[in-house]
Length: 464
Picture 1 (cartoon, rainbow, N blue to C red):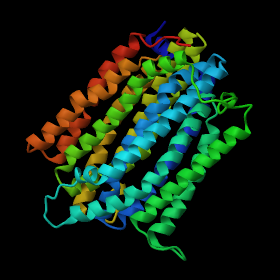
Picture 2: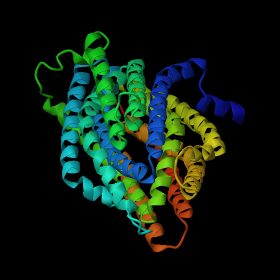
Picture 3: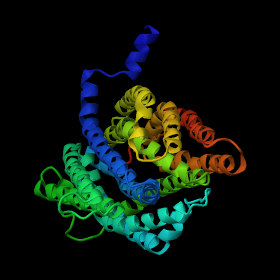
Picture 4: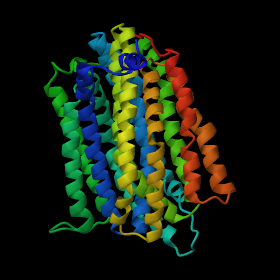
């Protein structure tokens, strides 16, 4: 057999394989595409108000990002088992994993609200370094505080929505969460325009309007998802008895905690690590914060493909593992990783070519636009490597290797990425773009580690 035929057999699927994969992935990609597009529009509209407003909102969104990842970690801990329970036909076990998600996300939301209400101002100030002496950082702090107080009201509906939506996706029904997201982001976009700029009878609220639009949209999305799930019990059998009692069998709870806690801590620590890296960059001034905000918003538009293709790996592979079809799990994983990286190379090339046009949309200085353009180019160069390490992470997670993913993800971030960012930003005279490139390039180390771990087949485990 020729090399090409061997490669094709191992790493390329047939039409039926890709149809099944894409039917699962495309709704998730579209959902996140619309979400990030509206986030981009929201960012532009806030950016029209001025650099201080944009920076204050961007810093708060960094803090909310840690919360979002904490919620993701809380639901992911149970999702490892949820996909396998569903694949095994164990709807009662699936119900218990849903209960765990609901309790965990509400607990995380409560703790986050307490922290940000008491220490929010101090946390925002960590990202504000006045290198010019014009008082712009004080103005940015005030806008950030206004935005934060309102955003806290939207934490609970976000938590409830994630508990329901992830369980729905584990059953292979990705369309409904996508449609709910479409309605929510449409609501967000319209209200952003009306409330930020004060169109018609609506008051001009600026950053407060942006926060209100986001919170209202989160309630809309949660109501749609929860209502549909309970109206379609035959498709969501995990809801049978979900609210008749509140307990989770000790054996199942213990199993979820043992496997899931490293994953929960991983998401929180990774997000906190990334936020710390951003804080390291911020010591170079408010212009860097604004430039990074623009670049990150653009990058998020392009990286949704590999992020959602990676997330689908855990669902598909998890179902195969739960059904005891271990060879099918390995075969599908190989093909999905290659497909994810291939798609990401295309997206990265497009981003590199057109990314530089986006900063011109913002109402900010030429220096900030130039920084944003360079940050976007660096992100495009590194993106294919991120795709592979991301797919490796979800492969390891699908088999319950949460301690391995903990080391692979958050420990790597704090042991390698954060120190590199701190030393380069604080201890060298390198330009901020060079610092950014070197920090991003640490992803290549993760690629090597991920390749070795996936190839070892340590993740090929049936847990339920």
